[in-house]
Image 1 (cartoon, rainbow, N blue to C red):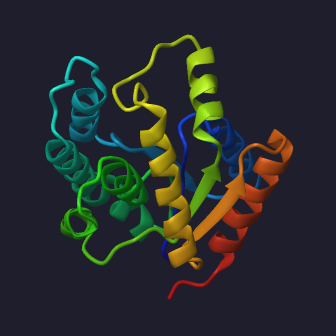
Image 2 (cartoon, rainbow, N blue to C red):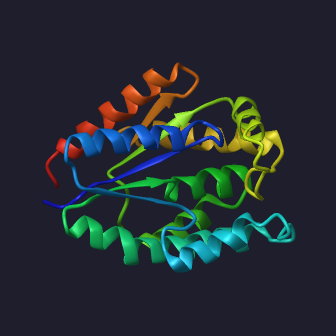
Length: 211
């Protein structure tokens, strides 16, 4: 049986890392084989791209360069790490994936949707995640959470609030247009509710037969 790719995505500060910890505990407790990964990153090449993308000193980076770097890392991610795991029947849980480019580079940066889709298609072909779980949160609340960590903001976090609001709408539009591939969870509810909703969705996807 082929593994499933389930993506955690959504607003900065929505709690993806915390929810992922609970997902890992759930999968471990049920002896379900999986790996976790992230974007940008996931591979040695991808991590080098991540360093470039998140480095605040790269403020001169244009939106098209940003999009192409994300796509390059995504192609490597799929071919080197994700596809081999799925073919072995191992589930993959990824912190962000292709929906982030639609939200951040199209809705946020304003690049044409056709351009973003073309780059995603180039990187992924017809492949798409089995499910993308969107942790939805008011960007102002998410940004405060990120700042409260005291770790400093990277280049993709240190952005004006209007950009983050546009990106949030991008996620919600994608979920509305593709309800079979997206699940929106209210990340403002108590953590127990967020975790419950995420794990319930995860279990449903894992149990589904492959097409």
